[in-house]
Image 1 (cartoon, rainbow, N blue to C red):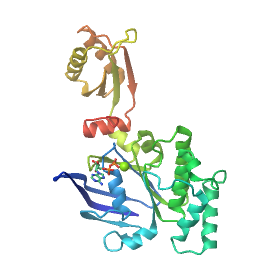
Image 2: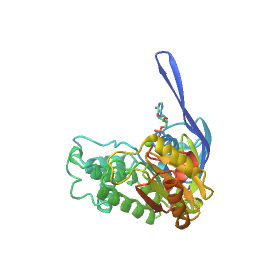
Image 3: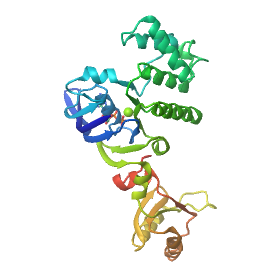
Length: 326
Ligand SMILES: Nc1ncnc2c1ncn2[C@@H]1O[C@H](COP(=O)(O)OP(=O)(O)O)[C@@H](O)[C@H]1O
Ligand SMILES: [Mg+2]
């Protein structure tokens, strides 16, 4: 449904005669299958919105090509626009209008009659269950209600592909769960969904397949479970802050513990995150007693040791050397 090759985009900005160039997207390739929820996972500034805006014909790529729902992005942007829906990161709706009025207006922009537009609006109002607030002024909506209206606006013309830029950013957990339900419902109706997110759990539980994007490049691609399986073995998290002392451990202690553990033959790699050490090992069961011995040999007593299955954050860390939260 979407095939992109070598998409690139730099921004030039000028401030007091000084020109700066930001390479926002540095050549990305991906393909999205029909009926799939595909996610772009990455930290702020990774290039997610820029990529989405290029695919939605809102921004001209510097180079690269894409076809979307069979239409060529460069040669036939008008056809692309007809076949897609786009929901921006920041809501375009606000103020005194009502949800219903905006929905009818949006539908009319696709050239249908007033009565057809009203019927289409009625359809998405029912599907997204907007009845209880759709006739109120939009400025009175909660964040979750506004986001549901945004998505309803984006799909009112039944596009084949919908682009959602951070559909749940800033929403409370119940509203996020609600939005996930809506996204799954669209997929189950046969729509193809391309969304961006900086939430690990969203990528993990909602997306059928993801690409991890960092600094304008895709660093990993696959289903969440395959990506996690790539990080073989277990993750052992050693917390050096003792539970019975209020203060964090000395930086020198953290450094020493990290040095000792990095040298252990059974430790594949060791990352320091504040006062915890994340160890990648074959088997946590056999590693933990050895970790304890190695540390206590140097007089270091960890406050807690935890075993975790690898998460998408571990995948991100392995590919970039940073955590997504950084
Ligand atoms: N209009 C613009 N002018 C200059 N730089 C921009 C502009 N839009 C985005 N950028 C920069 O491009 C990079 C990618 O931004 P963006 O695509 O919005 O990332 P994301 O959506 O992943 O947070 C960032 O460094 C951002 O500051
Ligand atoms: Mg963005």
